[in-house]
Length: 253
Image 1 (cartoon, rainbow, N blue to C red):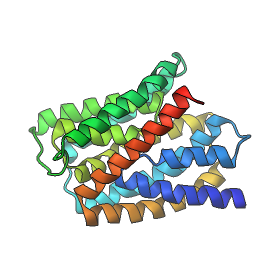
Image 2 (image 1 turned 90 degrees about the vertical axis):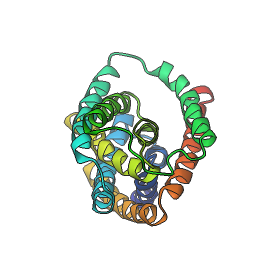
Image 3 (image 1 turned 135 degrees about the vertical axis):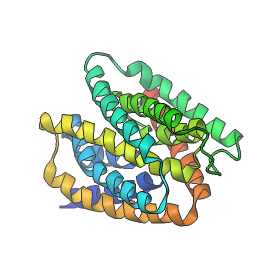
């Protein structure tokens, strides 16, 4: 019971962070490895997805009621993210991702420095493209980051947010709302694969899912109340922590 309570608390915090800007896995995955040190890694990853998908889906629903989203562009993008995630999960069985592990901290550092240098980046919502072009760009983002999520994973939500801000002119609030939809698609793809292999503890995932949705509810409401500036600040914080975490994993662990 103590282990399950600890996992639920971690899931609550992860749901909050994930709802605001993504990066909930930064909290929940290490917590699961700490609480269940003897479990197979695939089972912990699968159980994480079994909880996280409910938080991202709930956040998508909450954002959709308050934020105007370009659904004609985003639904194909979500489909592309789903396909990309399946392809990435297959690719990781064929190719060693260790090279990407070492490159990731530098990529995230570039994202962070660019965001800090561009003081107005993502503060104002000013979409740059018509529906057709927007759909193509959003689908390319979904396919690419979806593949990354299936292949490796850390920072998926942050990459979604950054690219929708940088390439499509969204503010951080709209980009975060959009990222939740695409992240739900990639989580679904991963969950199907893990479940098919029997790598989900459904009883643990169910408890964590409830906590994750509660955290998501609080995070979504706070993001909607405080706006793009708050989401941008959380983005900088989460990416900074991701740089430290991925750098440690790649070079010191």
